[in-house]
Length: 111
Length: 114
Image (cartoon, rainbow over all chains, first blue to last red; front, top):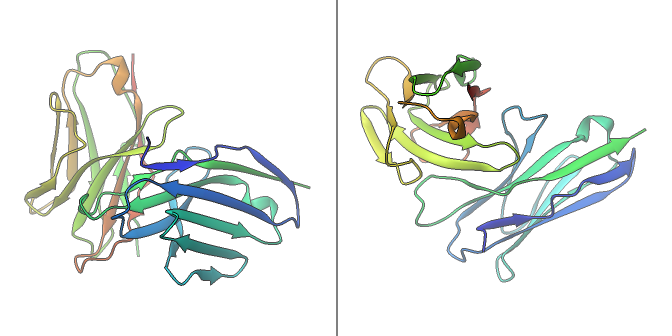
């Protein structure tokens, strides 16, 4: 079983739509959780950290469910510029500072 | 404040040659990580270094690959006797010294082995 699993998509949504991505992780000792975005095989860029209490940054909301080992990202009012691959990232207790990346979920926002 | 810098951005090597990839962390960051992204795959951790120390190299192939982060100068990822399977994007990330978990990535080096 992969450490971090995501639905690869693609998700095709119209501008203004709300879209949600899910991610599961296998290591129950995981400590830190993030969402990164990656455009066209460029470098991953940190979108937001994910906290146990959930957190929101503008149109983006992240949730963490430790009991189910599940992380989500909600994007409201999608923009064309949100088109990218969204990477779910987990850092485990025993992996030092190494990040474990999911393969990503592809989002295409259309006019 | 300059971000993480990597060079070269693109590198072409013939099978059997050596590849050297360089990474300069963000100003004030002393932790460096190398990741590899094969075509159609996710990023995979290779090695974590601090100045003059390899902290975790559990993701590094046992042969042909080495990394260093000297007291002065950039971190270097070295691949000896490259093979076609080494063709990938190699990303470097850095983080501050006070234990922050967020890592910031450089633009990557795309290695093509012909």
